[in-house]
Length: 193
Image 1 (spheres, rainbow, N blue to C red):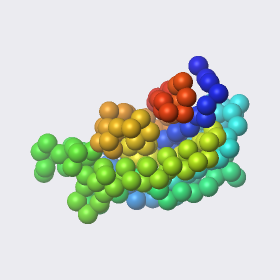
Image 2 (image 1 turned 30 degrees about the vertical axis):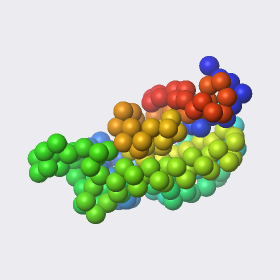
Image 3 (image 1 turned 180 degrees about the horizontal axis):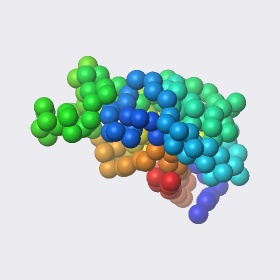
């Protein structure tokens, strides 16, 4: 179901070695796997009938490459605020390994030592949302899972920790938009692969 209001398409980057192994990948700039590249190319067929007023990407090579392989590289504008969560001391570590040393830890509640808290990521998401609303058009965004989850939570008016309620697979497409008017932000579609 579509309507006359702007829609914001969110694309999580394709698979990387660390997304496959479950390692937290914030600022480590690793490439897509061959499967990740194939999934990124397949996005072109899923998005080809749509026109966008802007295409924004995280500065990471995994988001940039996904954007390019999906056919939008020449339109890409890099936005630093779209970067993935800074995991600090937990960069490259799996949740299972973190829990072995810190039982009960939850990313969205506890954040990361020497990295970002949910509030920090939420502040970046809020700046992106302001830009989205100012643009008032259909926007395509390429970024990473945890950042996009916080963005969705903030879009709905939830606290940044509300991002824990959403899950995103690699190379998934989600759509934020509005229901009856611009005062009613909604999730129109989520995690389509």
